[in-house]
Length: 284
Image (cartoon, rainbow, N blue to C red; front, side, top):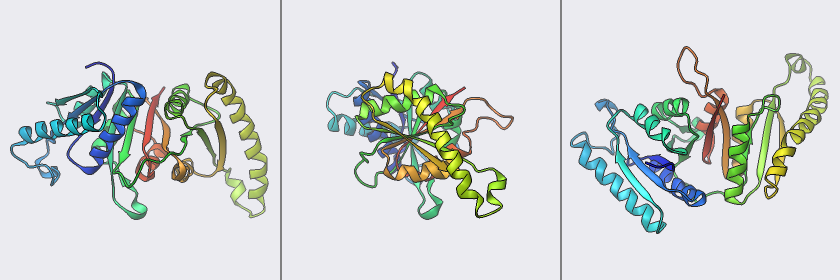
């Protein structure tokens, strides 16, 4: 398989939405879509949409049907399929290794609970060395809003900013750069302290962000970019910012802990609560 976009499909509504998003993204990139299905090895956890036996004919038909739908909606789009033989986590990670991007679905669970990425999705997102986009089931037309990216002004990551700017170029939209700064503990001890600290911190951080973005604006002159400094939780800030965004971009460190691959608390919050697609971009 040549480089392109890999999509995990399993017959669910969110997987269908992921496939449609991937097809649109493939057209923007001038590449193809590779649909894969990884059989679930735990019989007790099989989706009610997936018959226990026989699994392979059902999966082959699912891949073929999804491919036909994508080709019908976008004539000329290269679409290939493959039934994976390994488990879902390792199978998707291996499939993504030969691709530019992996796209998965995330399931809405309603209310304040947000969206359930699932153990497989989280494990894959934490282990794969390619950007991963998680898409919830379609609830209406795609948002035409800007690309929103969360960064650390003190430790910016080029891979994350490059992905965000490239997406803004492809989608012919703007870019919103969000940085969240937690107040020091003493600032919460008295009600009069908080406004003073915010007045002192926010302009300083905004200047740092503007300086940081200057070379990127030179490199991408067609992208209108703005900055937003939020005092408080980075995860909450990005979830709120996703309300008027078309895509949210978040970084993920590739270093592993003793507990295995992890995506981090900020990415975890955004993946579970954003109502728009979320791109998780690995970096050192």
